[in-house]
Length: 292
Image (tube, rainbow, N blue to C red):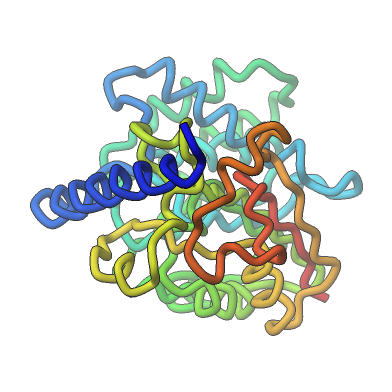
């Protein structure tokens, strides 16, 4: 199929999908942040393990979670990531979100996530994590507010490690979010965010991962819904962190379009996404920075 014809076809398909997702969210609200079935306990635990392992893998070599006060942005449907971070030696864990998606999460599930972790954990850290999960400690907190005012949600607490996974792409104004997390960052704080830059609809994600970038800003904003990918690119995150005084900013391409598919999957995009600085080959990005 000629690339020009393919571009038109996938733009039409994507438009119908976008309309369908918009209608679904208008009727049912924002309830599910990922594609893992809520009934598949093993898959949910695997997902949590993968998130934590990804954070540990991408952290700078001289940085550990041990003894750090950790803030997670947008934890989604489970706080088991926090349980695992405490089991790895974190001093405390706080999660903030605009939606109470983890309302049905249980201490039992978090304990199972720790017990089934295929890695080395110190008994003392595991015991501290279990104590926190039982509500006997202030080291495990979850705060939700629709306004997502990070300083207000954190109530004066400061952090030296700020994390997120597949959350930042859902924040409507990343500049506001980064300004907020800057206000709760201690000197020397490390910020690490895994950002899913692709279209999020499974029906089209594999065949046309850049589909959401085929639409004009006007059309895309017309069908806005809670949790809609914000279409911000790595250059936008770097700019926002720099403006807020963060340094040592690094962008890692965790997943990219294969070279033999590059021309096909990066053509036919709307302005300004057809510019070289948009790095449209990048599908998953890791944004790392340090607050001086």
